[in-house]
Length: 205
Ligand SMILES: C[S@@+](CC[C@H](N)C(=O)[O-])C[C@H]1O[C@@H](n2cnc3c(N)ncnc32)[C@H](O)[C@@H]1O
Image 1 (cartoon, rainbow, N blue to C red):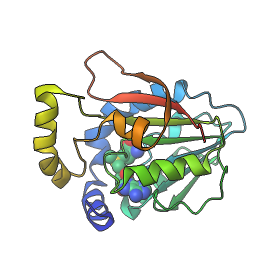
Image 2 (cartoon, rainbow, N blue to C red):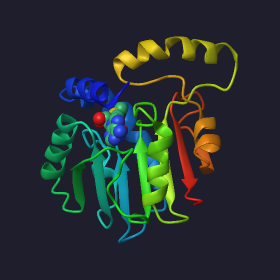
Image 3 (cartoon, rainbow, N blue to C red):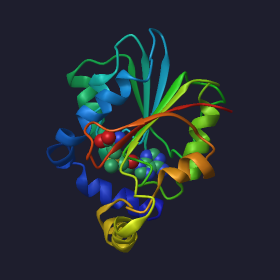
Image 4 (cartoon, rainbow, N blue to C red):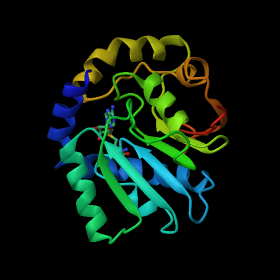
């Protein structure tokens, strides 16, 4: 998927996204944020903030900057920010692979269900590392493919089909640890057979 295809697919999803995904994603984002050690006064970046289902889950004592490439998703996030009066939240249209923030602008960064959507996940993670302070947490939630076996073959087989729906199914955690040199501190799931993993990494730059 290139950036335009991402924009087209997620613009189409924007009005029904919460209906289908919020129930699954919100509790997992809450778990990830609870382990992310966000302190009073911290600045947190969320890349691919989408319709903003996470926004009410951050402590109000921190500043949250949410970016996304799909304007229609951001419009939904703006509606939530206004409805919940979240003055600590700032939303910007921006490409997660080309962040316009200076180095070390944030204490922590978050990407929930985005790594398998962006055209170049290595570039996005590199950007998250650059703008996050050393030893800050990088929280990544996603479905990751198995490392071997029949399931991996199926995930690779179905990935082109999944791309039509707006995500890939063939991204593994090896991409984060090996290609992105991310220091993974903790990886866990809400339940043992949950399809989504929650990763807490330390920014080891
Ligand atoms: C599956 S949604 C996840 C949204 C939100 N994080 C959530 O948990 O509901 C993926 C989001 O990533 C955004 N996205 C895809 N590529 C992006 C990029 N290069 N930079 C910023 N956002 C991107 C899409 O527009 C979409 O809103």
